[in-house]
Length: 362
Image 1: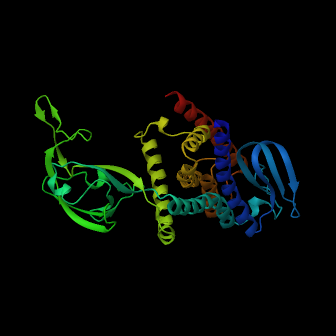
Image 2: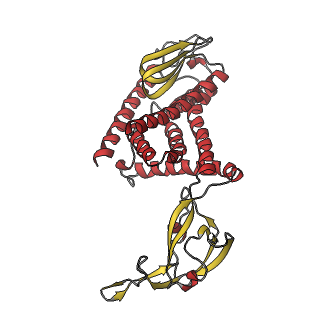
Image 3: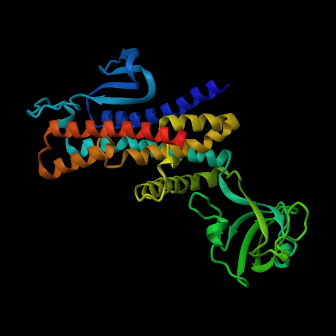
């Protein structure tokens, strides 16, 4: 069965790459670029067909990738290319649009995947009360086990934007008033109540007895609640309104993670390459097939953001070089740019291999 999950995970990753390359393809066609090949995968061609526009549509041996090849795109000849159909002779703004189309399509697909997630499963947007400490009388008088909490101090629960119980109540003190919006487990009504932060003895959730250490009662300051971050499906209209902010939140999470990584606040073992992605998705599928809906928007947003980075071989770097050419009115030497992108590609391949190795052995 695990083989099936791995195959499905590869299909998911391939889908993301195809969406990316289709963005390049569709915008290139719309702007009149000549396309020589649209390939699914890398390596030796398994199947190949030429359409009426002279474009090769290929299926290649290794499925983790793909590309959209434009006529004259990879020329490293410093001599002037006089062919008007060559990619390098198209206006800079057109080429920039083609470059950013791939990442943009990934982000647009993340919005679609987010909508599907929100309307079918929801996400970490509620807290379910699993235990109420009876010593916290202010809380126990209004909250009971099974209640669903939606807002705390007018902030909606949203793990994507780090709006969690820990962040909202990070600096509470005894005597503070906390406003909680929740659905009553008995009546189903949406209720808003104000609770006083108290300092009381902790209680063992299984026995109901007060916790004592070294002869002294263990005290805690807070609401006296045990909460489970959970999900609730959104209506069609709610999902339609929330899918864009949700995706923006995912993009922000990716950017924040990148910043933490380059500032050494996040260990390299916390990220992974394509092999790690495949195994993680396969493992998730093994637990619940529906859980793949959680990964689709995140992987799409990751791919979109990553390819916009100004690193050689990525779309973001191509945008930088084309912008420089636009400003200078002439390109950087083609051979120099080609070598820069080639070296960048080697570094990227080495990087993803290394982080996959680190991920599995650290």
